[in-house]
Amino acid sequence: QVEVVESGGGSAQAGGSLRLSCAASGYRYSVSYMGWFRQAPAKEREGVAAIWTGGGRTYYSDSVKGRFTISQDNAKNTLYLQMNSLKPEDTAVYYCAARNRPYGGTWPRRDYEYNYWGQGTQVTVSS
Image (cartoon, rainbow, N blue to C red; front, side):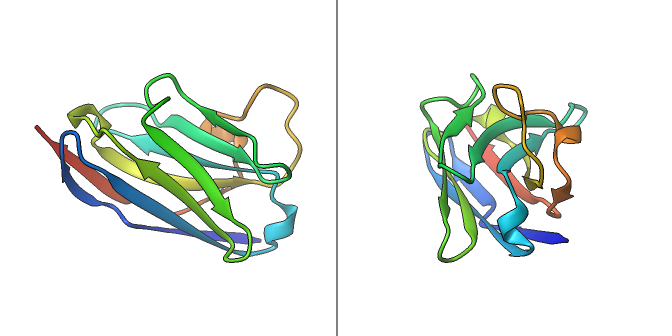
């Protein structure tokens, strides 16, 4: 069992920055990918970034590429999402997720491809 807990959400002005953190515990070494998702009101959950824990390769959706950076600190068992140049359309609840089996595609970006989820943290960007 893997537990993930997000923190760091809040409010920012457009053009500003926020950093989200995700602390992972449990059978952390069984995790192959960790990802960040977001869900805005009345919209489907969207995969925005992922990292392959074995080698650190990162993946991004087109909507955040060049603005967001996903990273991991293995010593602290913590995942980060640095969000720069924020836009009002980035407003959503952001979720951390973990996958505990190999993946054969480009990168797992659908919510059903992850096994463990955090409770979510709100990010609000005002114009």
